[in-house]
Image (tube, rainbow, N blue to C red; front, top):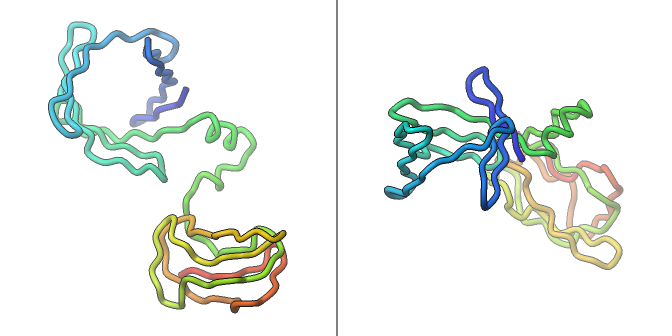
Length: 165
């Protein structure tokens, strides 16, 4: 189950193999794929031409063109809703912030340098902790402002390792 927000409206959507529920009501539709990211849908005796315009998985934002009108849809899953209820909305944002050591350990390798652009998922460094090598990856896009550690440095939990612009 997830929540979809379109303009000023929010909908609870549940999809499984046999049914689609929107706000608890079952929706019956006939779906035909016309091409890459293009579909024809018939629902409630109405015809819709639908095209996926863009998809940002990290920010959970989708742009969909329905009958030549583009709608921006923000999606939230159960975890996102829980974070909002707990007052932790800031955790939903995928900003590249300063990289802090997730645990005490030893720096084995540094894969980036000052001024280098990184994308989400790029390897930043390898941290050895409890005899295990942990590849630390970028949480988002950014440019390395400074590398605060060197290979063979011992680091403490929460210590800043890399800063970003």
